[in-house]
Length: 559
Ligand SMILES: Cc1cc2nc3c(=O)[nH]c(=O)nc-3n(C[C@H](O)[C@H](O)[C@H](O)COP(=O)(O)OP(=O)(O)OC[C@H]3O[C@@H](n4cnc5c(N)ncnc54)[C@H](O)[C@@H]3O)c2cc1C
Ligand SMILES: *[C@@H]1O[C@H](CO)[C@@H](O)[C@H](O)[C@H]1NC(C)=O
Ligand SMILES: *[C@@H]1O[C@H](CO)[C@@H](O)[C@H](O)[C@H]1NC(C)=O
Ligand SMILES: *[C@@H]1O[C@H](CO)[C@@H](O)[C@H](O)[C@H]1NC(C)=O
Ligand SMILES: *[C@@H]1O[C@H](CO)[C@@H](O)[C@H](O)[C@H]1NC(C)=O
Ligand SMILES: *[C@@H]1O[C@H](CO)[C@@H](O)[C@H](O)[C@H]1NC(C)=O
Image (cartoon, rainbow, N blue to C red; front, side, top):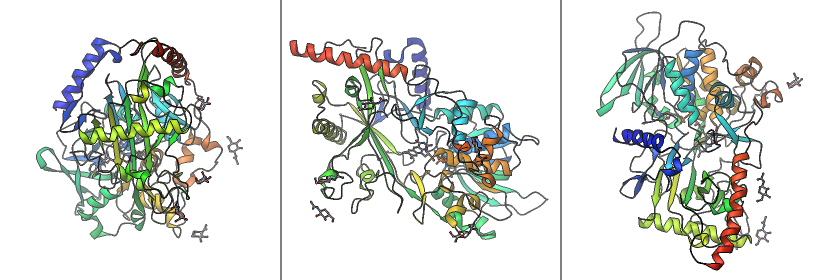
């Protein structure tokens, strides 16, 4: 509640002051941890839980919110009542943007998902670009594959924006959303009429358990949270769940961002490409454990948010220092987990002890230089960045090389994160979900089809990335959700063509690989503003270096 009003005050301030750069709000601090503005705290979420809902959606991740939207916008029959229960204080699940970071409280970081694939992610792209009409740019200026969500000026809005907007739209269509409302069990009620009914237990404020009767239950939760609910429910005593539900296993991923008051990489015009510890993924030199006693470097210049003042003479930003994950058995995530024995998965684990949030449902912390652990981490990381640039013969100029970043965002999505149970999933045979098939003797292929309705004859549905054909992506979750609502009788969606709808339905899945990968929209906004800002800023760097020789101290204006 308190935090919510702080958000409102910050919002009001922003409106009054105008340019976000003019705002310098100190983040609230608890112990060592700074509290940023979290996303997804949708206004108007309910507290009075109804006794009955036609459809209960368990989980307010992208798949749950999408299910609610589709049932209310696409139903050919009478609109069902849809109640969505989300365990945490926010919608979005593993799409989790935090905002208000950095000295000027205007930086956004995506702790989880952050981009979508043009064309291939038909449903995400259809929602973002066609239905919600959000602005988008290339995620990486040197690749046309990925897009991300931005505001009118081309600045990062956070990937969760589409889930927030979809939640608001669904609520305007009648969806009832309940935050801080975990579902603890779902019992099948004794049949009293032709309708099968379920009693859904919801933990309300203060631990009070409320019961809601439903005709259908859609589980949007990942595998571990689903298992927790099922172990507590009578469903599995009535009939076994399909073994497909046991197939996924969770993988771990970590990110770290550093906040710099001077975005030197922008001044240096390094706006794409990666920054990796030398010798990672080199079987000969990889053995050195020194790679892992300081924070492993596996960054991307193009990922983090940055902004410049009006004449582009000074820019500040978040540098993505590391993005790393486990590999999944025989499936390699492009070396993100450092696939060479004995270091498989070591990189995400390095950050484990830092990303301990006092709230066990949250995968991240924001640290500054005021605590010893924050200071040590930030200083060691900065030193590595400086050494890395010396190593590639592009040294970071002074005064930036000797200026530490002032904040670090550390996130580790591990299976302990209570409502998530990992970053994303692979299958137990070590193969990443990539195909849909009704060939049940190949359980990998059959998982998405079989887990959608895992209890024979019951109106119990599952829509989550964990069991999907596109594991590790929001699209996987939405594809499952689309198949669920279609089987429940929803009419086709309006924001993509019938041909593209057929691409995501299981019976016709990817029926024409060319057609199913076509872009839905041309790239209209491009990267113009940011390129221009960067070009101007790199000129500023030359000016700065020249003036630094004449006098010490900064010549650049302040905000
Ligand atoms: C680091 C990282 C990077 C990623 N990058 C990308 C990317 O760039 N692009 C992309 O498309 N995807 C990416 N992904 C994957 C993407 O985030 C997920 O595939 C997607 O968000 C999953 O959505 P979901 O709705 O299936 O599940 P979730 O997001 O896990 O949602 C499930 C919801 O259920 C809630 N819940 C759990 N238990 C209960 C309960 N008992 N009662 C009520 N609610 C409950 C949870 O709190 C959560 O809100 C990334 C993920 C991570 C972690
Ligand atoms: C990507 O980075 C390289 C090397 O820094 C640079 O030469 C190239 O112009 C960049 N491409 C784009 C599109 O920014
Ligand atoms: C790995 O390191 C060795 C020793 O430094 C070097 O000879 C070799 O070229 C490196 N391999 C790759 C693929 O970088
Ligand atoms: C590193 O490990 C590999 C494989 O175990 C071994 O062949 C190599 O000699 C080791 N290199 C060093 C420098 O210890
Ligand atoms: C089904 O999958 C099994 C196991 O992969 C395979 O041996 C079999 O040929 C498949 N059947 C069909 C009809 O594709
Ligand atoms: C697949 O779609 C492409 C693009 O629309 C089209 O040109 C092609 O003819 C289609 N292929 C088949 C086999 O229908």
